[in-house]
Image (cartoon, rainbow, N blue to C red; front, side):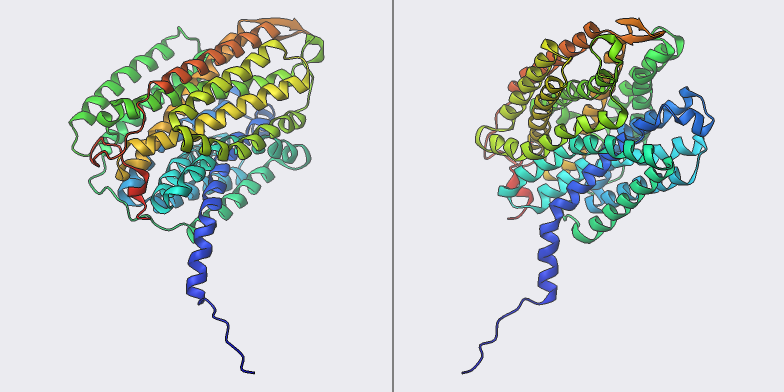
Length: 491
């Protein structure tokens, strides 16, 4: 009996198929890395003054530098991705992030550490660039779930980064933590180089250097004022000068953008309800989400003598954050299904309401660990729904050639919301303190006020979401016109 040969696929066909299957996991891994890089330094902050010989004020810049660099580079690298290739710029962002980790691992000089942390801020552009790549490369039926997963990586990475860093810091030299993140960054960079294809969708033109400088100066003044206001004094000359400078520079920047033939940010497109309202919702959602991370960590670590605190270690605190990350991972496909059935604006509104519900639970009881975990889990569920819907709203409202820059601005608005949330929550807690063991500690009433504030902002975000115009099919593609997702994929 003759043997019938079994047809086999050539190696050239197998490798592209494997790459296509790995594109989503590789991009999601990059998003998780970005969030991990932002949180790993937190357990080190109390010990860094002694380890580096620097003052606590100088050490705080290891967080501030990453925030400022990420805020500036996110829209800039997003625009560069639309112009020069999203894969290329994605690799640059991952390379800068990895380089920053290596520099942190090699030095104890606070000046080098701050500069290295600023390099790590480039990783903030990974998520908007990845979302744009997914739109260009995936068929329409897979885009929604992939974008939802990509958005949820921000919370997943934050939940994983804190316990990982705490464990390493507790049982090994603190430089080991940065060597670990450098290795993970190199792995993510190599995987992205191998698995991610370069998108053919481009928006060629001359890069707006003047607009980039103006945006950088304006954002640095704004965010530096917000982040340092509590430490320097909200009425101090420095803070007032920073806010005045931000208003002036951003006003001149806006005038330049409206007159430029190739602006860094298309303000006319961003001013429309289909794009502008999602940006406002992103700012409000970022505010509401970040309050949960700030307050939960402080509350469970508060001394038992306060009457409400649990006195947990930083490692135990990090482990308390893990369930929230797992929830964000599993609820991202649920968000995609709701968006497919009811539209992303409904998903965003539901997310805001669920966020507010989570904070309502925290107001009722924040003394029992299981209630704290349930409340935080509900907040994470609402955050997943909202964060997953935001990029989908943007993708449906902007031309295919502007997806990376538009999503970059949306991520920037979330960053500004988080910075404002940090300042507002800190102000509330500082004004509601009591004396315990010779130390000023925030009262339970202060924490509840922070929960009420964040929940109220979440409800406002839900109301803004309902004001976003519903999708309309068949719109013309062009500047400021909504583009159906299918047009970007050719599938």
